[in-house]
Image (cartoon, rainbow, N blue to C red; front, side, top):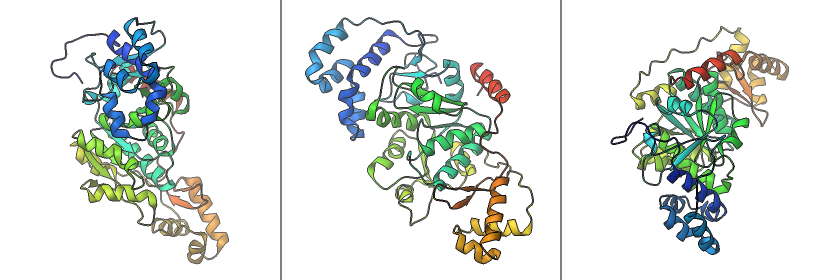
Length: 381
């Protein structure tokens, strides 16, 4: 992770970058005016302190300039941060307009271990479909099994599914928050480590979430868009990843789904089509021959019901016709759900779990979690 020309050693959070933290916290309400213009926001964050203050300081400009000139670093007790002048700062974030520092809800060694491994950014909206959540969870689980670190946002259904999938594989993930990292940590799966550009007490408002996308895109060696509408906002992060030299991929979806239009637009632009973790591992240059999860045999009736679901028959009417009535269909679906082969969605429809019942949410034990934490703090991913 040490970049060319970086000297060994160095502060975790130097005065220059701590001063920048203070300025961002003071300008946060003013930066929020630019949350809908991501390119402009990135241009602003690429400015030096004085230039940024001149650009967005408004009526508070002179007052903040005086405070900035007299600024002294206050105690950082209780805050874990690492700045770009430290050799362990992720080299992939050393691009123009990248963050000056990262704040962690945990020890710096955890960031070093996770960001030092191959990383994949899973992108998609906070509000996703059941299909999108299942795909994100399955991809994250299989990639984590292969030693890959999953990078995603810190809130919403799709990022949450990605972090859950990584945790099911017994591995930590990086949850990039748009506000102070410690604000997000309690809502994340135990193994997910919250990181943020902003110090613990700072509210990022809307601009923080927009700015965090460049950290997600920057940390991933491969960026995968799982779902998203066709607008500029959904495609901004993968296009930014492409501009940073990252490999970009997309997961296809139903042509009738608005949430599939973003990935399909990205595919039309030349992104790699992926349908499983093996293809993403190929983009990373890693062995792609993942062993398939063991699936226990099913009775003929359950196997027939699962086959119909996998072929797209997700309504009770279509299943009832095949299985001999609504009663047998409901019984089969209930048993398949209990076994972990299918999941009931928010709209009441059932969908097959992509990897079957090998691993279930919540299967990670406290002992395993403690062991992984020890490994991460010791510098092993």
